[in-house]
Image 1 (spheres, rainbow, N blue to C red):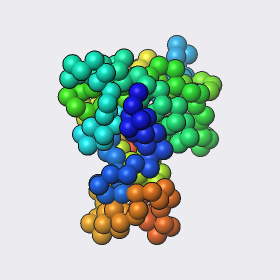
Image 2: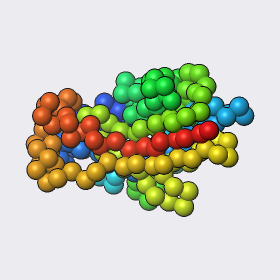
Image 3: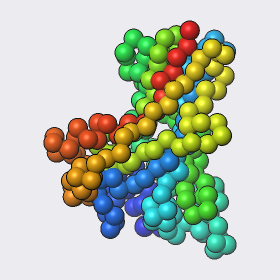
Length: 220
């Protein structure tokens, strides 16, 4: 793996990339999530599917086409996936579950993960198991977001919807939500924050707090 690719991988995970785009947000991600249930009707994992923007994908994948065929294979992208997934633990994988009683749910490290190229855009797949099965009775909230808004997540719409319940009891349902659009003044103020400044000023943090994606999951 080249030095530039190692740097790119670390920058994605640490979210301190230096590039000409606006500082906050700096990376854009189309996100989809699959909430996995076990045979008892408990939540046991979240499968994340994140598709990165063109500019970041090009930057992060520099030098990874080792066989020179003009394509990026899963094998060629594996070193990048390894570093990203390992480093993203410092940011709780940008994945948060709140239990029916208001408690925060803890995750173990990802079990399955890989990167693949989709027409010049990188897609990261990873399965994030919960430390213990989560009782799904009542309302569970899943959120996918960066609290500092350095990465802008947006749940996608496709034929299955942005959040899929895998193996859930028939009566369970997921209602997706997305962040509101930023007004121009707030967007300009966030873009002026230096790219190497991880924490937002308090006056701007309130805007970032609204930039959450996810779903409310209800089961009887």
